[in-house]
Length: 614
Image (cartoon, rainbow, N blue to C red; front, top):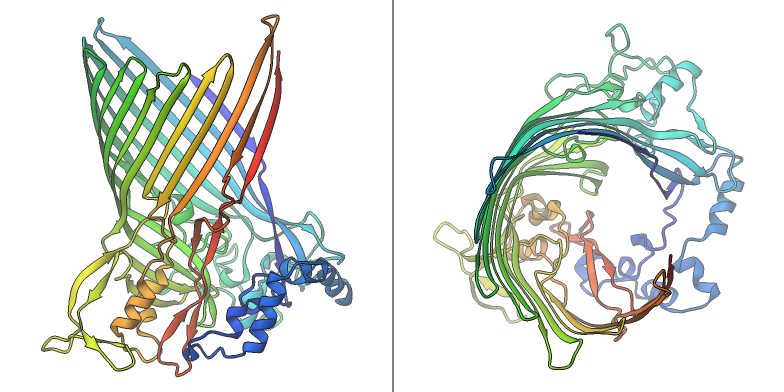
């Protein structure tokens, strides 16, 4: 048995601002595309401003740093001119965990062939999410109010408060100094318990094993501050009233239930479990066949179960267990230094949820977008081989993987205004897992496609284009030379990646976004808005070399040198995500996307490691 307690503090910094312009250099209004787009329907035709923005972004020199990086001098100056109140500050977002784990297990060898195991696992997790002021950037304090709430409730000061109790006690918003908590502060309380058993039987070349588990998982949110937007009730169960304006601060959801931010939320409890089987068979001469299958029933994640965990205790409706069916089969050959393995896999994951928050231009408000019923299917094959050459110490290795990781089914979505929890949209996300391919009848004189329609006037679909899970390249291969002799090692490899896709924004896959301002969907609008971007393939060369020496058989000294991306390919996209904003066309009849954000692989880089072991 073991009992383990883990605790820690984990923080990361970011910029925060209030009643001030967005200071980020890649803010969309500072980019060339905001001033000019070739298509006049975007209503962006200021070529002079776009040329200036391009010049500022592409030139090098100290005078351009303020355009390409944060202009810290300006931030300090704005705060200085604000008379003590920081309009810009550096926040530190904390995720501080306390974790208690209990594990009890037992083993029983029935005979020389069969081994049984069993046990119990329990976990208590208490994670506090909050943020503090890390740097006031020359100011004296930062006001603890919600800048998004001010847009809708400027005349109701109580609604603006991130800490309503402080406001009710002191008659003003809290002034936060360095190190003070502000914004949000809540606990994620998670409890888990499960029992498990497994058995393994070995009979010469055959090995068979099976495992079962069953458990329960509960979680809830516990707010440590009362937010003005979702004040709840007072200690006597009565509505809370702003003493300054006389307005009621207590709010209710669409079912008439009080929306709370302080105290405990409802407790969500889910049964969990799993069943797994595995078998392998060895054939003389270095052959091994193996297969496994499993079914897993998991609770949804805390982070994807609340509509807006930072602001209130409201849970997603329709939460259910995440269900995973997984199977795998492989063949391996290992003999005389040759090692070859081929693996095929198939996995289906159903009923996942996803919550995201973003500013919706159509609502002129910050919103929460909750999606349930997300399903994925993963299938593919992996091949790996390592083969020695006639040259001593030199071997060739190769790895290749080809998969299809796609979304399936149609999720359900609910979009709410963050300031009020008002539902503004609810329905399916029809183009999340795929999009229709429409039949083209011909082309107009300007090259615009003309689409076939059926007798009822509907555009004719001839197929669907799949949408892919953007986790990693779905086609990858590596060929490498490895040399090891007399404590020297050297490796040179070539890598190829393809079929990587951009992370999708579900708003773009709704009928609302595809229809645009006029409410009419056309094949061109659906294809443009719902399509998923595929990254260009990438080719890389890498190498490494190293050597170690032993001193009196007690000490070891050595070095390793690794160089990556020898071709200095700086255009390799490793990931990214679509924006969540919408652009109305010049005629207000359709929407366009905002520009996506991308992550890029570093260019040529190297690392030298020198070590001494004793």
